[in-house]
Amino acid sequence: MGRTIVVANQKGGVGKTTTSINLSASLASLGKKVLVIDMDPQGNTTSGLGVEKDEVENTVYELLLGEKTIQECLQPEIFENLSILPSNVNLAGAEIELVGVEGKEYLLKNALDEIKGDYDFVIIDCPPSLNTLTINSMCAGDTVLVPIQCEYYALEGLSQLMHTIDLVKDRLNPELEIEGVVFTMYDARTNLSLQVVENVKNNLNQRIYKTIIPRNVRLAEAPSYGMPITKYDPRSTGAEGYRLLAEEVIHRGEEE
Ligand SMILES: Nc1ncnc2c1ncn2[C@@H]1O[C@H](COP(=O)(O)OP(=O)(O)O)[C@@H](O)[C@H]1O
Ligand SMILES: [Mg+2]
Image (tube, rainbow, N blue to C red):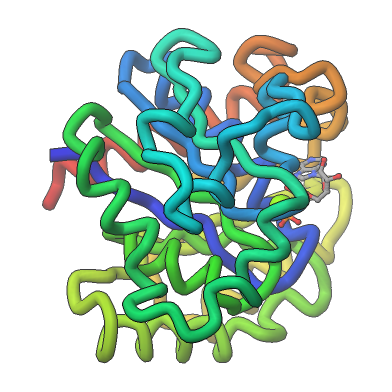
């Protein structure tokens, strides 16, 4: 049975989307069947994988509002082994339109249950907030993966995120676990990155991935070409980082 990993942190700019795209693509290139779901109205995972977000008609929005089925919304095999459920700015309206809808927390989960069996991994990219879209993601997920940017305020907001995960686990999805935290944008030339890693390790009682994603300009460039790092520059340090992370994610699943 496949594993659904929710990439969440309500802080913006910590590497959620970069991790969603490149972890998905790296898992796919290791032969795993992967579905990536873009739950952020910014649609950066969608465009970063080469899907024209402003032209796509069937998206997470149509799915959540019950206008389309998940089969109608997903785009199979945009790269080998990698399918996507795209989104765009329309999704920003869902929060309001779903007010008062009964069971709205489970809309994504219910849809995903129909097709989950077709994939080894489902990776869900969350928006930078703890809203209905993030709650839907956490209800649909098995685990939460938290990217932490190696910068001074890394720990800020993390206790709120952990609290939200606990609440979802208590009330909505008792199966939910924390996958672990992964450090992103590590800059080996500065002491700050090292200090942040040490500080978080000492203060956060969570599983931490051994793989640390380096700061690498190729990772920042790739989305403008609509390509994951596995295609854009497979020899870059960024590609190496996400490949190692993918291997660790696979192994962690096998341990359990
Ligand atoms: N490892 C990295 N090296 C260099 N730039 C990165 C790296 N990870 C993310 N970025 C860049 O940092 C910015 C924020 O990353 P993003 O993945 O969009 O974060 P989030 O989805 O959490 O808002 C983007 O411009 C992205 O290209
Ligand atoms: Mg993002």
